[in-house]
Length: 356
Length: 225
Ligand SMILES: Nc1ncnc2c1ncn2[C@@H]1O[C@H](COP(=O)(O)OP(=O)(O)OP(=O)(O)O)[C@@H](O)[C@H]1O
Ligand SMILES: [Mg+2]
Image (cartoon, rainbow over all chains, first blue to last red):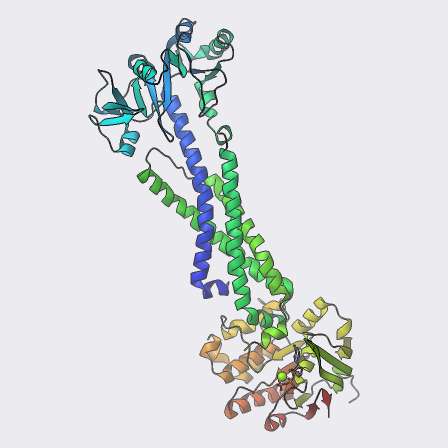
């Protein structure tokens, strides 16, 4: 341990480098989980009990549109209090614009709470949520260009209801060459007790359509259901291992070279190779542990950074991943310590002691 | 002396391979050292004195010949056995002190106890006597760089004998010291030998230093002469 105190700059840099890789893993997991939780919450905030999507739609991302003719069929089913269709159009990045029938959507969701402005009255108007307004630095009355069209921002509403950007459904359908098409139908029941039978009846009527209860649908918002995300996380974990390995390899290799003489002294005092390797491994473990602690602290920094710079992204702190990231750091570090350790154990004491 | 010698060396040879040439460092050494003896080894540079110590301490193997320490054949030992012998039976003191620079004097001594698995146990009364004899009590919490050469060498001696080694090997212990400190260190070695019965082998270039020993062995070109 004395060596670590003796070289404070190197110790700090090594731990910080390990901290960066730990932070990288925790931030990626935290952002994934934050965004997914956020999406799930907003989906529930729509107020619906059931969602109907086109055959073959993926949970997140890719989804096909279907004919709006389905809507009256759904509306006429028993126990269906309200059914409303939406059209979702991606507008770059993680954002999308949702076309809604304002009256019906309000009836289902309990209505928007306007922080600024008012509901749209004409066409070419959108309503955005507070998060999106903050991200784009816009307020009610401003103009936004989306899908090659200039929209007036009619109102800014409280976040939490399905989407962040809303436009009149028919207008969005026409603009995006999706006239008469929907991306999803949201259904509200007169009594939630009928959920199972209604879903069964819907599945019967609309074969191949993806029909879920909202609870089931939002529970599907997980890392596993996003194409490639799990693989991406694995790649970052692999990178983390590599960084831990390289950092410790370099740091410990240099330490062994520097301490040739000290290792020789210890051997002359009767220290076994195991004793010497043990010192090195303890120092390595300490580097990894301190690095992990630094990395965990860093995630509070990245969260602050993300919420200030990209308000429409959400990062959560993931304490259940702290032990995982720490183990990754320790494993990488231990592998990095193997070669320096062997070199130290094999060091010739006489040669070391005759160093001038 | 009827008692078996603590060190028994027979026909000891050591050849170093330095690139293309063989260096004959030891050319056949026979030597017995009795228990409680204080022996000085003198000889010109390159005569093989340090090599003899390194072999005695199990730091390097001889090319041929036998060594017994305390009746045990060093060459028959495993590597782990020689490590244990260095830990328990041999204490080294070097010309360059070789203290661990990051540890205090006390921790340098404690390290030797730690290696032998004795740390935590209270130091025995014998060692308290040793510290008094070395005159170190008030300097123990300093780092080596804050100590004079003489003080560092006394710490090194304390470290070498804290585990009660059967033999103390001192390779030019006064080589870096002025006369005053040399006399101090040599006096301490003689006291350790006189009062505590410590067996000591000391290499020296200095004839005056050699006078402190009971017996002087002279080496030249890898032989005892
Ligand atoms: N590792 C080594 N490789 C090759 N030759 C060596 C090695 N160590 C010592 N020698 C050679 O062996 C011979 C004896 O060396 P040694 O160090 O034992 O002498 P010494 O009597 O201790 O000398 P000094 O009084 O200068 O310390 C010398 O010729 C030296 O160059
Ligand atoms: Mg020598």
